[in-house]
Length: 473
Ligand code: NAD
Image (cartoon, rainbow, N blue to C red; front, side, top):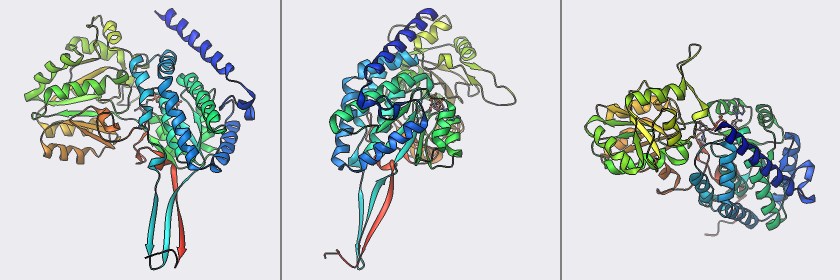
């Protein structure tokens, strides 16, 4: 099994390397780059700086063309690129890797930019939303290319260019994506190096980007360490940090819809999404009914002993006085059937999610497991469920979900949780416009408060005042 995995990895690396070399042309060698892929941070930032100057000379209609190029590329090549991402990272599901690229078309572009005007006795003042310049970007392994593509749309629509330090375990697909995006932009507009990327990213190159004089703003998408590092940097940071989204189900809920939604959200890409349902608090009067509804939608229930076995494989006990269990990264993003096999359980074909009853002390409840097992905790009533949800969300203020027909319970949970996304009676993905109203982004800025990022997030306000004229009424 391991030899096969290793062989696949090697083939993927060779294919991606060949694709990369094939793209090397005179147009792509600017400052030693290869269609935006650079060896050093200095070169990447300098090229993105030149890219920014060139973009600034162009009309907004060129940004519209660029956004279209990125969307078309993601849609047309979703299958190939999704497969390459899965083969390189070894986490998640092929159908959802493909879908994550197909939905890039839902990321808004320049239509989100606006212009505010004030007209009065002293004339006319307009506030316009201007670019920052070069933005430093850190991407996660959980969605390497989708995050890069989504951010590229928002940042370029806002008039910026970017330099990306991808997650090392998803760097090949991010670099290949950057090459293809730059090539498509060049063919459509003649512009180069709007998306630059470091070929061999490390923590040191990330820190170089954080500190670089040519970088005006940073935007990171990732877990607690990179979120803390970005917030400690001297530059303004937009931080899309970790989550541990709880679900509360009360006695008034549509139980079948709750079960279906938990599986739709929690099983998506094997629960890699930061918004994905990670633990459920259900009131005891409907607890058994909810558990019984899960298999109708692709759930498979583990018993206590099986959950204990899986817990021991998925987490190491807390060390050095910490109260955090350590997540075993080897299990992250694996299929439900693979997790089940590890504990000697065969699940029916089509099983999307494992689940079962635990108490709140099981590490699957407080930790962000990023794998398709979701613990269900029995609670006395909705208030008890909301209390536990609050505790185990850890004030990340990321995402929370409730299934209820009781408007008071919705309101109480919304107020208590104070999360960036709060979804009622649907899967977590409804909070990103997938089955709910709204728009998509792969970076949801949580601790820094910008929310679901868009072109407007990556702009600065500039005011232009004309004194005593142009009020025409
Ligand atoms: P990760 O934190 O392991 O890595 C993210 C990136 O940060 C990588 O590129 C990594 O190389 C870099 N990095 C890590 N520590 C760093 C440091 N000290 N200084 C500089 N760079 C550093 O996260 P991951 O496993 O790739 O992604 C999963 C995490 O990201 C989860 O916690 C998930 O909730 C979160 N996430 C959040 C959002 C959001 O929009 N809020 C979106 C996707 C993922």
